[in-house]
Length: 303
Image: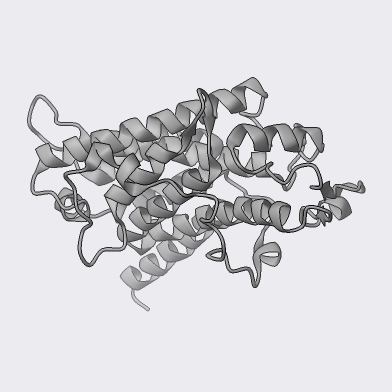
């Protein structure tokens, strides 16, 4: 095997490892056993009935891009449907937004797509907790193998919490009442999982904001550099040195700016800026509401 082949193989190994550590530099408990055999498409959106016509007003001039999996109009639709009341976030459209963001990352190539797999495992966990709470209101919901790790009984009685996973604040309240959130050690909880998604959302928000910018000099920087900068000011603070180095390798493989034009069905940077700016504003509203809910409950640093 030549030097280039060995280098390529090493990069793939590093990125595979990165995919398993991405959101926190060591994801702790795995959810594969919990999610095995679970069809997350079954009933996932029954609680989410918002009309596309009603919530997509901000992008009414856009059409779905033919032949593409990622659809920016759907992402914007879900983001607009997520805010509830004055300060809450509905979990169904929130997770649907992540579905589209995962497709967005997958479209950027296999290197970044590895990262999206870990995010999918986390959205799947919250969905399963929600469905189990709805389906088995008189039974106990087991949170992984936590009891064997801590020596305590951490069964989650859901008889009075069938709507616990309707929104961010209802989930926080229910899991605090049921004492499944530990502020000193890792636990299998929806709140801890949400925090990891929340951190990743800030990274993507900043990245999309940077891609949307039109610099005064007129010189557009590469998406690879912009993604690296967004990462360095957000997720990197939660990662180990090794994961930070591996992340930089993943960003090198990002496509050029023209690819982003095609991805959202626009023709130039001005059009891209208009579309992404709307998406970034919608992400910002969801992020700020989630940030406030987590902060009020001292959950921004859950281990």
